[in-house]
Amino acid sequence: MARTHRIAVIPGDGIGKETTPEGLRVLDAAARRFGFDLKLTHYDWSCETYVKTGRMMPEDGLDQLKDSDSVFLGAVGWPGVPDHVSLWGLLIPIRRGFDQYVSLRPCKLLPGVATPLANRTPAEIDFYVVRENTEGEYSSVGGRMFPGTDREFVSQQSILTRTGTDRIIKYAFELAMKRPRKKVTSATKSNGITFTMPYWDERFEAMAKNYPEVKTDQFHIDILCAHFVQHPDWFDVVVGSNLFGDILSDLGPAVAGSIGVAASANINPEKAFPSMFEPVHGSAPDIAGRFIANPIGQIWSGAMMLDHLGEHEAAAAITTAIEKLLAEGGPRTRDLGGQSGTVEVGKAIADAVARA
Ligand code: ATP
Ligand code: MG
Image (cartoon, rainbow, N blue to C red; front, side, top):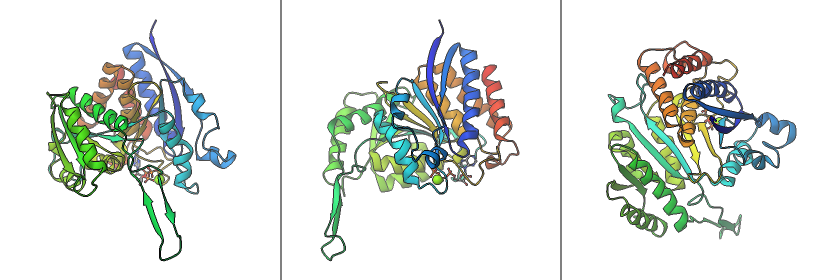
């Protein structure tokens, strides 16, 4: 019997509704070509749902998703619905509820995509940002006292647990072990943040002892950001706390070029819960409804999903098809200087995967 993967599909809002079908088209081609089945369940959860029902997803939303192997998401967010509603009504409950403690973003310059950095070639920008996704600086521990008076003060604590710190750093080392350069860079700020960051450094050094083949280094977050721009070729796998990882995981894909091609994953590596795969871009209200959005970020996220599900060959076939399409001047959307629509690009990549 063929392997079956159960996928919960949430297209969401705006261009998410246009890119998700192209992601599915390519996944379907990969399933046929590499001999596995995808059992899809569609959910129309979105800002439209919110406007109609007052909720982004039903109260038992997580229960509905929990038996799937992965969640494949388009984008959520729409003008008129505050960002925190779409974030806290859908994305955060899924990430936290399913303990997706790794946020993973490839920062890879694809051929034929313009990078804002001058004279950089694809071989020079090819790294991953690994962000801790559950604790750290984004704790809700803190408060405000004496509001509106001269004595007013606010505080918010960073929480690093040993479990939380070790597991994200371990993930970064495991990822590096699968890559040819085998190198992990740690984002720190132990010169200014004097309790949590020295602890982070300590746990990083302890973990490094388990991986003698992996080269390591560390930079303070400020200079690290500068290095992303000036020396992107230095990096292979970069690991950071929730806040530092957040910053780096926007900067990294940005140095690798168009927002339309960037992919991301929210992973529970132990597979105790479903992981979630989504493009980096949002719902892009300014171009939604015209089928001109670039579907590559979505399609690449689909490749990351297949990799997570153990379909490594199929995942590689998709990324190869994307790179070939771009290198060989295949159809491309306007953000990459072309004239083609979303569907045409999706079909071209699906065809290439079918012939892989
Ligand atoms: P978020 O919802 O994450 O806050 P945002 O509202 O900041 O995102 P996006 O929705 O990603 O931003 O859009 C930012 C800009 O990038 C817009 O001008 C949008 O048209 C463009 N853009 C985003 N995704 C794509 C895509 N797939 N193809 C082409 N252009 C895109
Ligand atoms: Mg937005």
